[in-house]
Length: 179
Image (tube, rainbow, N blue to C red; front, side, top):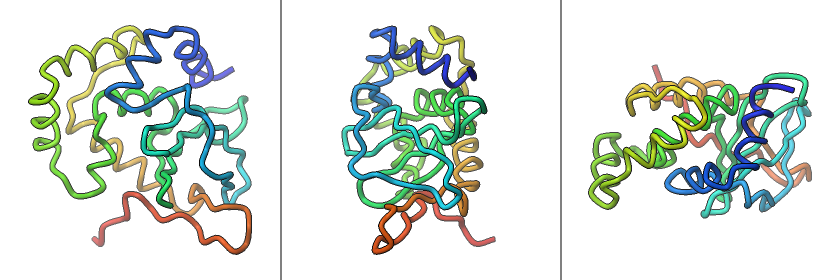
């Protein structure tokens, strides 16, 4: 069993951890039914582990015998790797609950300020699951850099598609920027 599998089981078994990740991170282990069945071009198996309120699904990619990256596929046909493993993904989700908005070009400082204005206790809320899981906190800038680094590894092996030939592959949530 891998660290990702151990972490997932712990989140599933401790309701306070599951609740802390469902808000503000929108990583809800109770929402595991994907909107559609997906497949990767490499035929690596996808295991839904959580969902978000907007209809997206988080997947562990691969078999339980290996460390597995975490893929997020949204209901609008975009996808990205969000962590090299579940430990990294949970850390990024906890530190950057607004991570999907970074793909829309919003600045970290603006998103963080808006979140703290609406939820002054955010920093304590963020630190609670990280501390309970023994995960190191990162600055928002460090988390964003890690997210973009792992997202850059999405193509070509982790771009999902609906197994039916009539469906195009998903688009990258974080398209590579030209050099």
